[in-house]
Amino acid sequence: MVKRRARSLWLLLLVYAALMLLFFSFMLHEGWRRGRKGEQDNEGWERAPPRRLCPNLDQSMWKDEEEEGTEPGAGSPLPRTHVYLHATWRSGSSFLGELFNQHPGVFYLYEPAWHMWQSLYPGDAESLQGALRDLLGSLFRCDFSALRLYAGDNLTSASLFGWKSNKVICSAPLCVADAGESTAGGRRDKVGLVEPKDCEQRCPARPLRDLEAECRRYPVVVIKDVRLLDLSSLRPLLRDPGLNLRVVQLFRDPRAVHNSRLRSKRSLLRESLQVLRSRLRGADPAGKALQQQQLHRGGADYLLSGSLEVICQAWLRDLLLVRTHSPPWLRQRYLKLRYEDLVLSPHKELRRLLRFTRLPPVPELEDFVLNMTRGASYSADKPFLVSARNAREAVTAWRERLSREQVRRVEEACGDVMQVLSYQLQGA
Image (cartoon, rainbow, N blue to C red; front, side):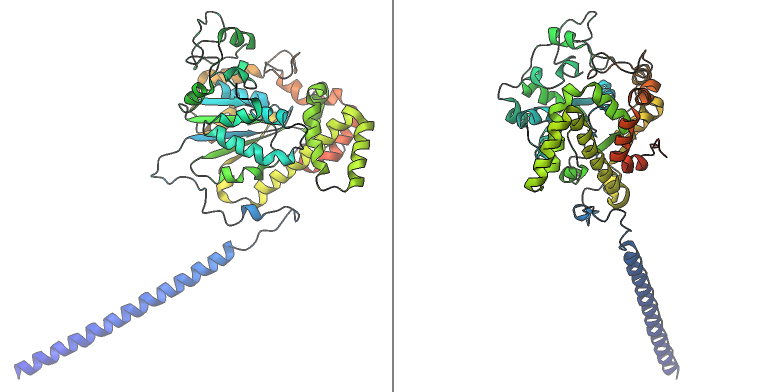
C-alpha cells in the first residue's frame, strides 16, 4: 500500500515537471517571436529612405556602407590619425594649415598636388580627381615616391612645394644648423613662423627617404590642398579603417573669396582654367566653341568668376552629401569649418579642431592663433605667405572693394550654397 502511494506520488511529480517544462518552453518561444517581430519592424523603420533634397545627387557610392570603415572598437588600439584639409584657393586655407604645421605632434604637407597639376596642365580639374586621391593615399602612408611621377626623379625635401615654411623640414632633426636668432634649425616643438629665407639658407636638401622616416614618427599626418572638387572622390580612403582618415572642410564667404582672387588673379589663371575646363566635359562641339569664345572675350575676369561658380557648385554637392545622405561613419569623420568663425573665435575653433583630430592642446599654439588674427591690416604684400592679419577687416573687406555688379554676379552664381552656409545675401 505504501509502495503504491509512493509510485503515484512520483508519477504526479513527473507529470507536473513535464507540464512546467512545456509552459516555460512556450513562454520563451512567444517572447522570442514578439522580440523578433519588433526588431523586424524597427529594421523596416530604419531602412525607410530619407527625403531627397537634391534628386540629381548620386547617392550610390554611399549606400550600404555603414558596416565598413567604422570607428575602432573600445578595446582596440587607435590607429594613427590622418587629416585632409579640404579647401579652395583664397579661402584662408594657408592659415588653417599653419595651425597644424605649428603643432609639435603633426607632420604637415602643404599642397603636394601642386606638382601633379603643373605636370598635367592643362587637364581639367574633374578628370584629375582620381589621380589626386591616389596621390593622397600614398602620401598619408608616408610613401612619397608617387611625387616623382610629377616632379622628376631628383626630388628632395627642397623640391617640395611650400618646403621653406615647413616646420618638419626646417627644424631638427632634418635641419641641424645652428639656429641662433634664426627661425629655422631649432627645436620642432617651438611654435612660431619659419622665415623662408632662413630655411633656404640653413637647411640643406634631404633625400625623400629621410622625410618618409620622419613622417612615420608622427601620430598625426595632415595634408592641406585646394584641388579636390568632390568629397566623394575620397570614398576609398574614408572607408579604409587602417587609414583612419578625417576631413576638415573649410568654407569662406564667396564674395570674400572672389575679392581675394581678383587681387591675386595672375597667380591663379592657370589653375582657374583647369577648374573651368571641367564644364566642357560631355559638352557638344557647339557648347565647347561657345565656352572658348566667352573665355576669349571675357579674359581673366571671366576665367575667375566662371571657376568660382564651378567651385560653389562643388561646395553645394559636398554639403548636401554630408548633410542629408552620408552614413554615420562619414559624419564622424567630417568637420565643417567657416573661415569667419575661425578668425573671429580663434580659441574656440582651435579647440574644436584639436578635439576632432585627437591632438592635445598646446598653450603656445593658443597664443599663436590669437596673435595671427590681430595684425595691422587684413592683407599682406605677399598674399600666399601666412602672416598676421586683422581678422575683422579680412571678413568684411569685400564690401568696400567689390562693386555692386561684382557682388550681384557672385551671389547669382553662389546663392544656393551661401544660404546653406548662412551667408546673408545683400539682396535678401
